[in-house]
Structures are given as structure tokens and as C-alpha cells.
Amino acid sequence: MAGQASPGRDREEVSMRSLAKTVALLATLVAVTGPRLFAGEESLEKLIAKAEAGGDKQSEQYVDVARRYADLAGQHFSAGESAKAQEDVKNIVSYAEKARATVGRSEGRIKQTELKMHKLQRRLQEVARAADADDRPPVTAATEHVEELRSELLDLLFRKDK
Image 1 (cartoon, rainbow, N blue to C red):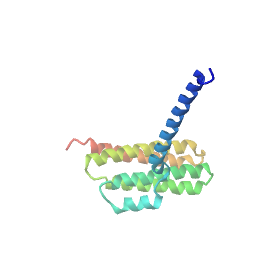
Image 2: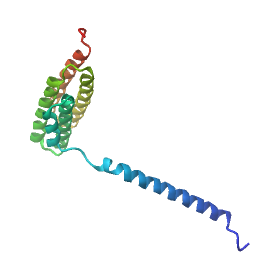
Image 3: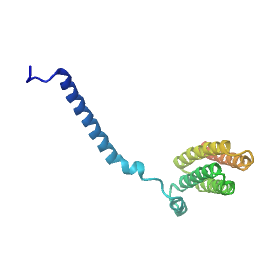
Image 4: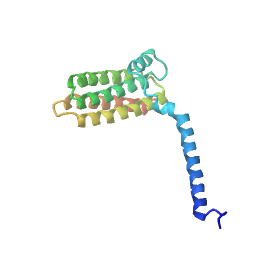
């Protein structure tokens, strides 16, 4: 039986081929989607410039800027940089107000802006929970203000005088 391969060896070859196919597939997947996954986000300055430039999605872009500031506030609170975080919270409120002011009357834009505003509100709640007790009141006030702005958007969306 010197010329025949053992049944175990056949299984090993099949297993190695299947592993090679899997690795090749993963490599192709990473090559295709990798640049998008690892590209990173736009800089805050570019995001602000886009929002300030106007366009039909301006209100949504303002909420995106506010959301980015919320992320920064969370990072600053975590790092113990309370003054920077408080400034971020002021920027959040400012950009959320700009979003509300520029939403227009398009139902689609109102709905998308409200959805993003809801996510912003949730993020602010997370930031408030993570902040020290002394730092919470301004964040809580910002959260409540964003909730009021969301409520106004919902009123616009479901107004009776359509």
C-alpha cells in the first residue's frame, strides 16, 4: 500500500483547499471594502463648511456637526477637560438650533432631521451619565433643549394644515 494516500491525508488536502479559498475571499473583501472602513470621518471643519454652504440637506448637516461636538464633549469629559467639554455643549446647542431654523417645509427633510436630532439627544444623555455630577447640569439642560427642538420638528411634521 505504498502508492495510496491515506484517507486522513485526503481530508487534510480538502481542508487546506477550503482554508485557502476562505482566506482568498476574506482578502478580496478587505481589499474592496477596506478603504471605506478605514478612511475615517471628515474633519469637523469640513463638516461645518458643508453645513454652512447650504443645500437641501443643510439642517441634517447641522445635526451631524452637533453630533460630532457631542462625541467630542464625551471625550473631553472622559479626559477630565471640563472647560473644553462645556464649550462643546454650547456648540451642540448652537448647531441644533441652526438645524431647526433651516429645516424648511420638506417633510422628508423634517423627518430625517428629527431622526438625527433624536440620536443626538440620546448621545447627550449618554454624555450626561458619563460626566461628573458637577458637570451634568449644563449637559442635561442641552439635552432638554434638543428635546424641545425635536418636539418642534414633530409638530411641523404632523401639523394639521398640510
